[in-house]
Image 1 (cartoon, rainbow, N blue to C red):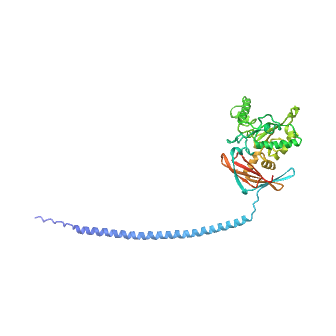
Image 2: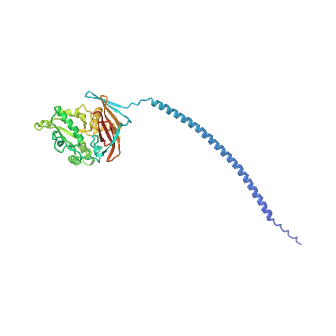
Image 3: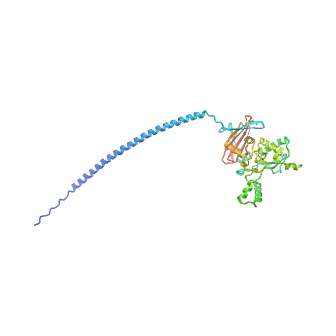
Length: 392
């Protein structure tokens, strides 16, 4: 007889749930304990790092303050030392006909007792310092409307090639004063061969020379070869209205015109005395106008012999005579020394200030009420140059 099968006791679900709950609670407790331990460790590490950073910041701040104090002390000593130093600005001296002349650099000193005047850019082209050469063209705002005929203005007392020989009024006044004094000194037979050239005339001259050279050259080479004889249109000194070419002429003696102007007594007198009237010899070159003159063709770009004179105004002509500069060198000099004074036998005669400007149609410019007159000019190099005369 087969024994009866034992029945498996069914597990109590409640007990199983309780056990699982106990296990989960135990795991949670262990996890919480681990979390609290880790958190405490992280917090401790964080606080240690923060304290280290704090201490490092204190040390860095102390070091910075020590360095700053040292710099302040050094700066204080430097200021004290600088206060004892007298800065010596440059000066230039020359004796011209037994008169002692001196140019002094005024550095950053300003003008005194000033008021302003408004001057148009076209009028500033007539002032005397407008630089025109192979590298700098006549400015766009140039206007020839104010030019006058030398013959008509002088009542034909100044011999000219014809009535079309024209220059600006300032240049004419200087030429007239020089001509009158030369005549009073016994000089004669002068003639003004040429003055202002229009751009049309300059273009025709350039084209004529280029045509003559076209059988030898072409393209850019032809243009460059032409420039050796005549300036490219817009870059000629004749187009400034401030220059004139002198020669000799006597209707009763043709041989007078054949003389070398610079070797004649008339030419020597003008070259030696023109600076007194605000006029310069424009293009000194090798042994020209005389061997005593320094060759400036490397600056002017003109090496051919021209009896060309240029009005710049008395203050600038005096300065250029003292320095021995051509116009290009003088403009560069003013760029380096934008405020100078000029003394004659220790008496202030001229003050010159170069003022950088943007291109405009007119400018408000400073005038010192202490001066007897002023001369304003653009230099065609980004500035207006003011020249003040004292005591005349």
